[in-house]
Image (cartoon, rainbow, N blue to C red; front, side, top):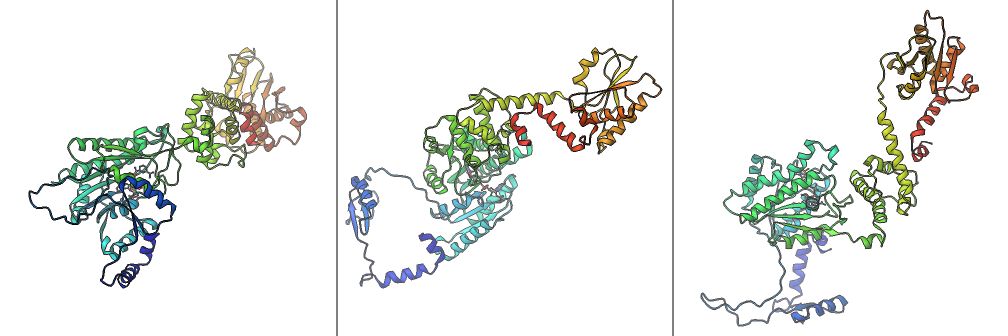
Length: 579
Ligand SMILES: NC(=O)c1ccc[n+]([C@@H]2O[C@H](COP(=O)([O-])OP(=O)(O)OC[C@H]3O[C@@H](n4cnc5c(N)ncnc54)[C@H](OP(=O)(O)O)[C@@H]3O)[C@@H](O)[C@H]2O)c1
């Protein structure tokens, strides 16, 4: 609140200063506020007293007695040791040194800067590939500059560098820019490019962009700061728990961070500062601000940015090269005392922003936009609990209704659905779906006698009738569905095409022939019969004889029939959706 007043009412300092001097004691001293003093061992009591809100003035904890006779220390005089006290560390930065924040215009960077400012840092180099581009970045950097100019106490230098630290030359340039402000006091490596993706969709370029932004920049900075002739006080990378614990889709990010962590270990070995802080997802700002997160096996909660920085205050003094800060989600609190299964589904609704009570049961997870990463979690869960291996796409085809059943303990539906999907997939994979180039093909070895012609099948080959054809003692010929037929746009045109093919094949043959047709090609058979070309036509279970000769055999009618036929292989849920 106070910082808003100070930012918006800059005159406030002056008015306050005047007021204090007009209202102070006649001898010019400002009278201290009322206070109540507590002994250190009564600190808890002091806090309790404060929380009641009944006190007036300040509450003080007296750490040591006044020392009115204290003199400046004479050379060689004995020094009385300080009293043993429990203390907590606090970080202060040197106002005369410069601090580099790579990726400083990012979400976390723009919060780190004021945090460092309030801890004494005054000279900053923020790096970015292209400088401020969003309105927010322009507004905040403008506000900082104004603040630096208006308040002498906070007077600071801020330089935005676009030097390319992926190269040694660019890094050298960045260090020169920092040294122009002052000796380098610290490096905070925050630059980040995320390219999250499961390995099957990852390209080498996207992998390298993410990992290089992390480790190449950090390694360049390490190499060149070692040659500065002085040690930098802080050499820090904002790493991630996904480096320590692994996270689906983030192998590039984890790898880049891990390499940075190795740099920190080497620096510690060499007696220099090096610190990798493995943060969990950060709330409020940055890349994770608008997404939900789980890392490896643990569900983590976002840590508010001010909390991340409070922790950093302590961690900067840590003796270890790699430390971590994340909030483990209290699952019991979030999802009651449910089983792992119900927790997973509850988490699914939460991650996808779905209210299962109002979302129609038939909507699929793919339609709502299930993320691949959460999908892989469901995949692992099904493997463990249902003993079934499924692809992410199969999970995306599951409906909200199916998940509700799974949540309530009924697993049969999901297992049946996934089994049917797998069966359909196997069936489809068996089909070749290659379009033949020849107009016809022999289906058995007989070359003499009255021929039987099979009209093309829906799957473009005759595998389903081959066995049957081999048993017949007459020539059996399959009429192919070629690219040429695909160009035809009506059933009549298709019928005309096959009538011509058959006329060509049977030219000069007096023995006659029979035809077998199904689906749309049944229409061709009726044409052949009507023209007196074919002797007999066998129509395989498509429609009743009346319909064959009626107006019903339109294109729409045939499409509907074909869908029905295809649907024989489909899980019931999907057919329901088509309807
Ligand atoms: N946010 C989180 O939840 C979270 C959690 C754990 C750890 N971390 C770590 O915290 C750090 C900051 O994260 P953030 O959320 O603030 O990310 P962010 O908002 O994406 O900011 C990162 C910035 O890095 C800059 N950048 C990318 N490539 C660069 C390069 N080659 N040189 C200089 N700058 C470059 C980008 O700015 P330009 O486009 O302008 O170049 C971007 O604004 C990251 O290192 C991240 O690993 C974050």
